[in-house]
Length: 333
Ligand code: ASP
Image 1: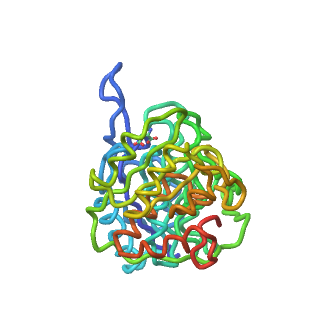
Image 2 (image 1 turned 180 degrees about the vertical axis):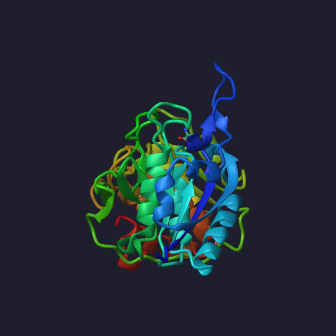
Image 3 (image 1 turned 45 degrees about the vertical axis):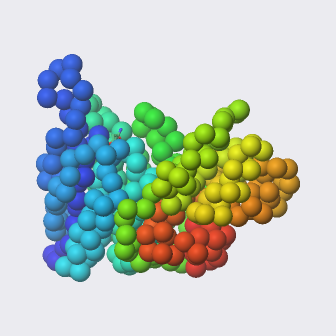
C-alpha cells in the first residue's frame, strides 16, 4: 500500500526529557527519532521523515529559530509531506502555535504537540499525544485549518488555545470556544468547519521588540514611562477585566500610543476585551480614544506575537483589521 508522507520535527520539551541519574532534574535528551520508537503503529499509517531540530526547553525557543523551523516545515510539504508534526515543550506552545499559524501558507496541516509527563514517567502522555497529532496531520479534514495543537485527545486551534494549568495532564483549553475537534476511537472528528485564514508575509526584520506589561493594583508607571526610551517598538498591556488600566496608566499610554502601537488585552485568562461599554479614564473607550487597540479574544501573549510579526513585515497599520473581526483576518475562529 502506498502510505502518505509525514514529516515530524522534535524541538525538545518535557516530551523529550528524562533524568540521567536518580534525584536529578529532567532535561531534554530524547531525540525525535527515539520518540517514534514508542509508537510503532505509525509505520502502518505513514512513511515518516523525523528530524531533531532542537533539544530545548520551550522557554528558550526564539523567533529566529521558529522561522528556521517554519522553513523546514514548508520544505517538507514541497517534498510531498501531506502533514507536518512539531513536538515541543508545553510552556510556550500557545505562543509558537500562534506564530506558526500567522505564517503557515500551506493547505497541509501543521500540528503541534507536547507532553505534560516526561518520557521516563509512568503514564507518560508523549507517545499518545504524538500518535494523535500524526493522525490529525494525516486527516483529510485537517486541510486548510492552519495550525492546530493536539493534547490529551483534543484538537485546539492555534488562535484559541492556552496553557491553563501548570502541571495537570489536562493543561490546555480554548476558553469560550472549546476544542476545535476530538480524537474519538482513534478517529479525527472536527466540531466546527474550517474558517478563512489570512497569512502574513515573512518578517523582513527580526530585531523589533514588543513588551508585555500586566496591569495590577496600585502599580507605579516607572516601566511604562520608559518603554519607548528603552527601544520597544510595540507594547501589549494585559489589562484588568475587559481591558482597563488605572487613570495614571491611561495618561502615560496616551503618550506612548502616539509613538508605537499599543494593544490592550485582558489579563483574566478568558473572554474578550470590550469596545463600547465603559467610559471612565482607563476604560476601553478612553484607551481607544487615546490611540490604543483592543485585543478582542486574543490573549496578551498571542497579541504580542501578532504585533511582532506585523511590525516585522511593516504591516502594523493593519493591526486594527486583524483585531476587529474582519472575517479575512479572523482571530477568534
Ligand atoms: N514544562 C514544559 C513542557 O511541558 C517544559 C517546556 O516547555 O519545555 O514541555
